[in-house]
Length: 122
Image (cartoon, rainbow, N blue to C red; front, side, top):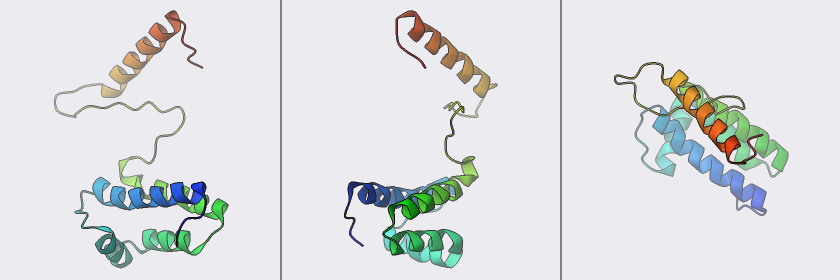
């Protein structure tokens, strides 16, 4: 189905990336779109069914709802998508202690410094 609106185009692009992300977060090889869809159909029917439903509807609100559900399911192994109020920290687990606490301290320092020079942080 060819997207007809900018919203449909963005959601279609998001589905494309979610399919690739499904494989990446599970450390599975991604061998292209066709092979990925075939694999999902055989091994992750609930994900495949959401993708199929997405492409079967032209109702933008339904596509958005399916995209949100699919995002939660695809990112479930890594704790789901980033949510309001969460702080993302990056690093490795090798020799690092209190990564979240260090990230929060850095974030607070960054926000305080931004506030001191006049940036609106709200």
